[in-house]
Length: 280
Image (tube, rainbow, N blue to C red; front, side, top):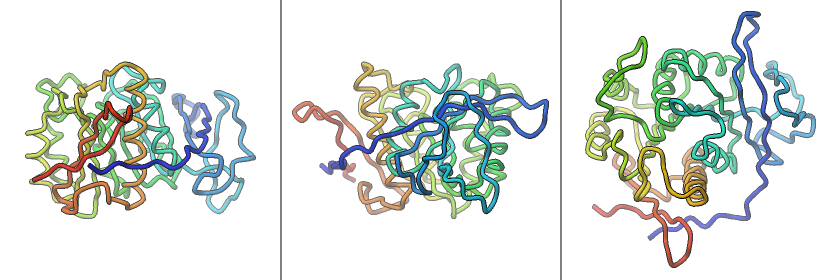
């Protein structure tokens, strides 16, 4: 048993805003920025915290004390920024990395284009990710970007139907196999996720050139549908582990990076989630 002992929790601040490209006909994309009082890129005293105030990207070389996002995330199908699993996960990651989440109800291809739009606007981003359909869009967007880290939460790898306009979800395994050796991928899935079966994920990882790590949440399904407090708790906990992974700390994983696995489960005696390394 290897428990991650969290330091005193820093306060997580949020800014809700709507982003649009310089194109006057561009859509508005609801966004939420998560950061600590002193984010990795400096203080944030100059930022308005009012909701829905447009936040313009920082010009190159400009120093206006605005936090620059490290991680770009999006939600699953039919979801939004307030999805409890995504919100709690982003809070966990934001303990160590500034996170920008965006909302887009479009197809995988449209969301991939939104990833690219925001990457151009916020070049500080070094990792892409999402939950469920959002993770598929992150893989798609990464194929034409310089980002080398992917966070794939509840990736629908085992999905047997494809209803997404303009993209065949059966293409997903090939996209994963084509990721290059300099790309790092973190998979996060529920033990009972019927859309991301353990045997399918294990098989695809064997053939990947990219390095991969895998966190499995004990007893969880695709939507991490525990009671609300426990659902938020486990997603925030996994977010904290993800933050460590982003920073290069993989000590909570097994030493063999190619097959590293971790089980996150509820410890009833301690009333908290713990991480356990798989044996064998």
